[in-house]
Length: 282
Image (cartoon, rainbow, N blue to C red; front, side, top):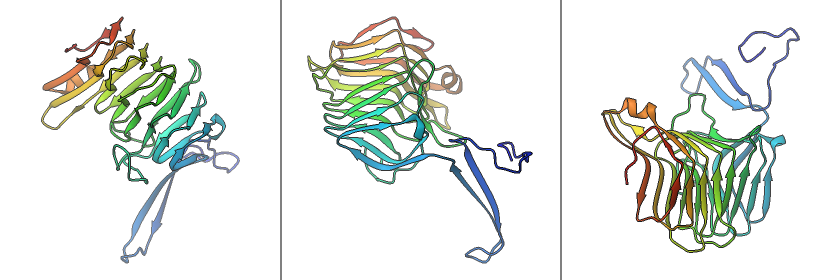
């Protein structure tokens, strides 16, 4: 049987690593003595990460992809997580078995003090961070969070269906800086990239050639809010270069909108070459 439910000629189940398997069976006498159809969804050939803390070098291999995240991934001092190009990182929606982090109901990747995240795909083989849901929303997992003397290098990655694409704050390091480049961020419920409170003269952050689309939320009353890139209390070693920001879908659905392409507050960041399909507010 193939993924469309059509029996195969060899009478075998035809699946690939990472495919979702949906099993339905009929229970004619459940715990309450009632008839009931049971539906279970799982992945074939995945690697589950159910909450982990790294304090040394670790690599997520394409060979073991997809990775199913069901609890927070913490990269602490001494920890270096390298994600190979082509890896898919899928987050179980609204799930955090560690019940911790910035949101105890959603899993996240947390790069903490002196931790390092290297997630550098290629133009032909990107890294994907997304929801495991068959019908994903824009708030299924928390996002990538970094703080203090953390370092991150993200390139040719796709980040979607999270609350934040990248949430970084209080960076204070002299270890060569951090960057997010050539990546796509979409369908996030608040900010594509959120940067807060790092005026240190030694903190370098490069946000370059990314595409950020369909960010923010619209409630049932038609009120909408969201920001593509937000920087507050950030020094002049932060550079925002040649990014494309578009939010036409959310703008079309909101009657009272407060969407921003870039939000700046008490910041000396260098900005150039931005393409907007939304308004800019400073």
